[in-house]
Length: 140
Figure 1: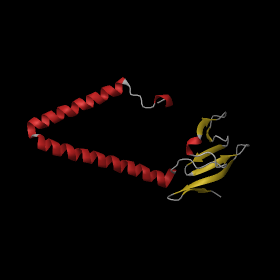
Figure 2 (figure 1 turned 180 degrees about the vertical axis):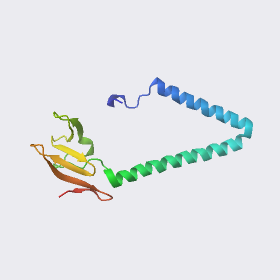
Figure 3 (figure 1 turned 90 degrees about the horizontal axis):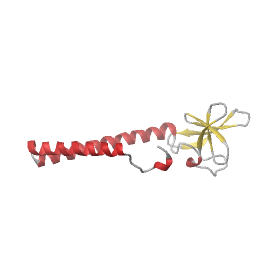
Figure 4 (figure 1 turned 180 degrees about the horizontal axis):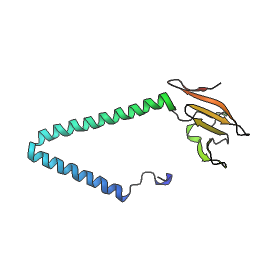
């Protein structure tokens, strides 16, 4: 999605939403005629609680994996201390590789849990490392 299109809904998405609402309404009507409103309400409540619980468990698992393995925030503060996680840009270099630039113009690379500073000659120098439950610490 293009950054200027945040919050916009397409006609296809509205069609899917309408389809899902119609399917749910048909299910509720069928359940009412077959079992009565009380049983349909109990089933719907239990199903909703199960879906919310599974979603929260999934998000919790993803968050825990990020805390342990990749880092939150994903990028540390730059060397000058001026650029934070949202100030980095991921760009392609002239040689075809990709790198991370902070707004100060410093070039970085991230590999796994390590964050490297790229020197003018192309070599890399260790800068920060992500430690589980400790955050970004100097890698020296």
